[in-house]
Amino acid sequence: MTLWKGCWFFRGHCRAVRNVAARSLFQITVYDQESFQGKRMEFTSACPNIMECGFDNIRSLKVECGAWVGYEHTGFCGQQFILERGEYPRWDAWSGSNAYHIERLMSFRPVCSANHKESKITVFEKDNFIGRQWEISDDYPSLQAMGWANNEVGSMKIPCGAWVCYQYPGYRGYQYVLEADHHGGDYKHWREWGSHAQTSQIQSIRRIQQ
Amino acid sequence: MTLWKGCWFFRGHCRAVRNVAARSLFQITVYDQESFQGKRMEFTSACPNIMECGFDNIRSLKVECGAWVGYEHTGFCGQQFILERGEYPRWDAWSGSNAYHIERLMSFRPVCSANHKESKITVFEKDNFIGRQWEISDDYPSLQAMGWANNEVGSMKIPCGAWVCYQYPGYRGYQYVLEADHHGGDYKHWREWGSHAQTSQIQSIRRIQQ
Image (cartoon, rainbow over all chains, first blue to last red; front, top):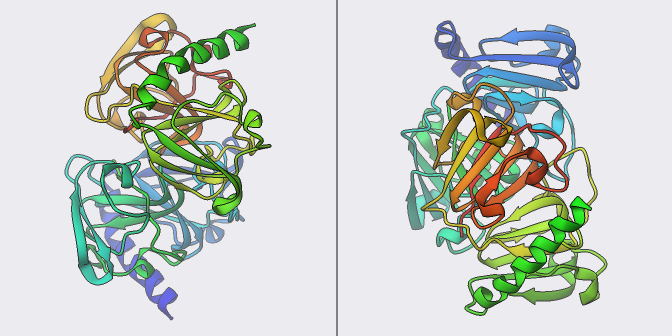
């Protein structure tokens, strides 16, 4: 039930996205084989299910414009993969280098609130926005190197921009894409970071650039 | 022959590193099993061959202080893995999520010139510092999103700080650790980025923080 609500939320969001995309702020080309081979399709707005376009999976892609987030499952669920402008010739070019290798990319959508120049996030020690807090407006490949006490974050508030938080230092492991225009920018518990989130472990964090 | 010259260079460098490390700017704990289990050893300076310490491999590690770079082979050769402060419970926490999976970390050293606040790099379109150029002093998860024409960089000059350059956008794929105090900060051809470099493909770039 929770999963379905999550998917419904993004479906609603994506209707708005289509209007933005009409101004060509977002463009992605996906392929059903590695190294930009096989069946090919261009998108300028969200795709909740690549199978409805005759693909069994996406095995390579090029982001021509804007920032996108890909998902392991249809309906914008499962592991999240940030996709910024450039070329991704195979699955491990976008995956979080995690032991949990599924090699599926079944849905994707634009990250409309990405704004590299004006992004803020406040991280809190505990859930529900309590405990020690720290307002961040830059990229941090190691939160601990900058004084954060441990390898966990309890909750987060995002007043502007969009961010990727990572399980390990150096932008590795599970990825969580968190945005000012989702949940009202409030992520009060790690379960809200994504349907694949299993712990509150976060060790690096960065802005998403448009 | 080229490989040996590269290794010799880092051996010389590491003698100097030991003096710096004496002031406890650098500390790393390595384990021969995943999840911080098994044999354990602390280091405050470079280790050119973990087998000389009775390890067959490193399978997890914690960086307590400073930035380090790990290498696939002994003698600071092969794939490079940037290691910043935090916990790395297994190989894929530091690897570049590349199809080329070796799962070996046999030597490591501190990155002495890392300076998150004052870092500069100039990227050039072609080798030998010719063609279009761009001076960078911030992190860029996608060079193309910021106006770089393609997915390649021909050569680089680093007047200050230390940087990691990555094959794919979003800090994925092969990693190249490039420093102001190596090669005089001049990397005039992709062959100088590391003994594992095979192409001039670079799509994201970031500062190393201390």
